[in-house]
Image (cartoon, rainbow, N blue to C red; front, side, top):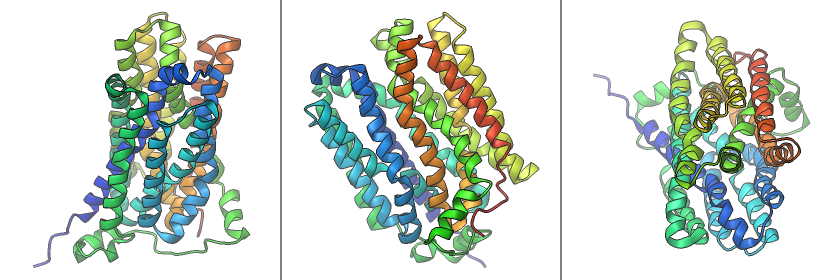
Length: 418
C-alpha cells in the first residue's frame, strides 16, 4: 500500500506566512508613528518623504543582486541574512537622533530587506506544486496584509505605553526569532529534507522546472532584459507598489488633512486597505488557479490581473468625486484591495516564466515596484502641495489602468530562460 504524502511543504508555507507578517509589521509602522517621530526629531514633511524613500531606494538597488544570490546559493542562508539584518535595523530605528541618522538607518533597513519577496517566490518554486502556487501566493500575501492592517492599531497601542523608540525595539525582536528557527529547520530543496517522504516529493516535483541554466555573464542578463515578458511584468507591477506605498506613507496625513479624521477613526481607516487586502489576496490566488485550470495559463494569470486592475483604477478615481469622508476612504481601500487581488497571478507568473531563475525574474519585477515606492512619497507630497490631495489619487488611478493594459502583453507560457 503506497504511503500517504507527508505535509512538510505546508510547514514551509507557515514559515513564509510568518515572514510576510513580520515584514509588514516592521515596514508599515513608521507611517503610523510619523507624527511623533517628526515632532521629536524636528522633521518637515519633505524630510519625512526622503526617509520613506531612502528605504525604497536601497530596497530597489539591492533587490536583483540579492535575488541572484538566492538563485545560486538557496534561500535558507539568504533569507536568514535578510531577516536578521532588517530586524537589527528595525531596532536601530528607535535610536535615531536626527534627520541624517534616520535617513541612514532606513537606507540600511531597505538594503537588508531587499530580496525577501523574490526569496519567497524562489522557495515556493522549489517546494510548491504548480497547481497550488497561485493559492499559496494568495495565502502568503493575506498573512502579510493582515499584519499590515493591524500594524497601525498595534503601533499606536504600544507607542502609547512606551513611546515610538521602544516600539521599534519591540517590533524588531520577532524577526530575530524567525531567522534562527528558519536556519535550523529549512532545507533549500525538498529532496534534502528528511521529513519529506517519496509521495510528497513526487507531488512537488511534478511539472517543476528541472533546468539549472546559467546564472552568470552578460548573455544571462541580456536574455532577462530583452525578453518580451520582462518589460510588461515590470510595467504591470509598478502601480501596485506605488498605490500600496501611498497607503503606508501619506494615507494617514491625507485622511487627517482632507477629511478631518480623528485619532480613533484614523487608526481604523489607515489600516482598512490592508484589512481588506487579505481577503483579496486569498480570493485572487484561488481565482488565478481556478481560472488557469478552466481556461489555461494565460487567461488564468493575465485575465485575472487585468480585470482586477480595471476595478482598482475605477475605485481610486471614484474616491476623488465624493465629499463624504468614509466613502472616499472605502473607495481607496477597495482600489488597493483590488490591486492586491493581482498578487497571486503576478507572482505565479514569475514562477511560470522564471523556472530555476525565479528569484532574479521576481526581483526584476519587484524592483520596478520599488521604483514606484521610491518616487511615490515625493510625487504625492509634490502634487498635494502644488494642487490638492485629489491630484495624487488621479495619478494612482491612471497608473492602475496602465497596469491593466500591461497585463495584455504578458504570456505566462513563455519562459524567459529556456
